Image (cartoon, rainbow, N blue to C red; front, top):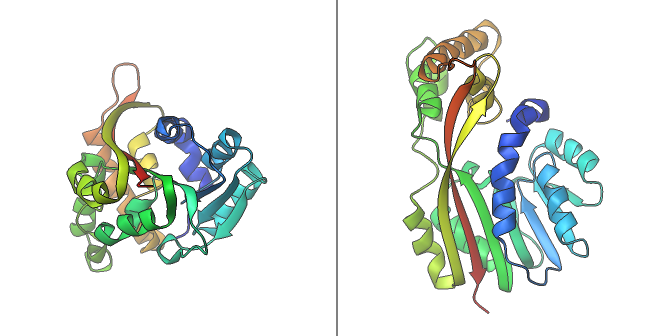
Amino acid sequence: MAWNPQQYLKFSGHRLRPALDLLMRIPDFEVRSVADLGAGAGNVTKLIKERWPDAVVVGVEGSLEMVAAGKKAAPEVEWLHQDLGSWRPAHKYDLIYSNAALHWLPDHARLFPSLMEKIEPGGILAVQMPRNFGAPSHLLIAETALNGPWRAKLEHLVTAAPVQEPAFYHNLLARQSEELDIWETEYLQVLEGENPVKEWTKGTWLMRYLDALQGDEKAAFEAAYGERVAKAYPQNSAGQTLFPFRRLFMVAQRKA
């Protein structure tokens, strides 16, 4: 899947807020090494480096386009172009941070305990993932995919929500954790512009579907989804679109 940094960063302020909320919930402790998994365009990785300037910070990112953007935004960070699913670090980290990335990976029952094993004793795993897959913004992508001439090309992409309930992750991580904090926040995002929810998903979840199509069929699918999602999220009297968005957070300190 080819990421477009410009499309993703159209709503950079809204996307940055949960990343900062996660970063600020990490307690102060001695950090010598950090891995930012799914570092994207580097705007958050840069802030991690600023908080722990003496630490070695590695941005791990599977998109060449994002790595190129990240190197410009945070040249003081070590950048590793690698698919997150195949990341096998040679050493453990004091902090593994991941904002809005791990929902792209399967088998969380294996993934999260494995990540904890890659953290030094006393170190921290800090993760934020969207959990908005039951909202119209995402359900209407699947509905559009299954109700059009493109169904045969897209129906394999219609899968169960990739992020589980908070209790699922608590059960996974509690045994390995000295301290474990898991919470959810629903942000009421106020968006501007024409059909902004479509533009939002076009920078993330909708991309998988658009990448599977070409030409007129791709444009027709986007238009059909756009019509549905615009009705689900109408503009208010001020010309704004209110887009509630739920996110799941966890900060787990590995047992010493």
